[in-house]
Length: 104
Image (cartoon, rainbow, N blue to C red; front, side):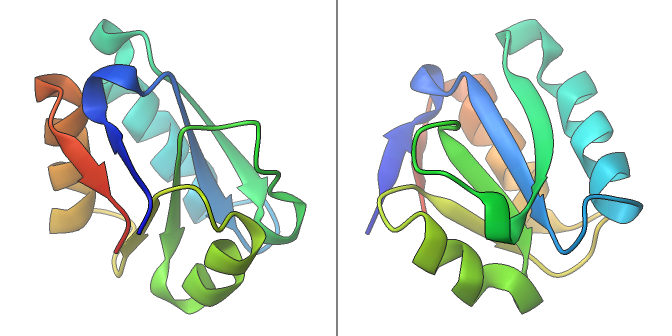
């Protein structure tokens, strides 16, 4: 199980199917929420994830198996709803408080 301290997170990637639409909105929302922690947030198609360009990957449940396969050593945070998902709120809190983040 991959994990990282929220205090060590500097880059979050929102993995998506094609890089347009809902994932872009989610990435912008996370970037705004994590601005004070100096965390950058980008989005990337799941098939272009690389092991070295992020600290945490966030993805929809439907893409989670592909994301975990692409980045087996990184925490992969799985959500069900693009807006208002409790797991995303939990991730933001873990980064803000420096708590341990483990993949789902």
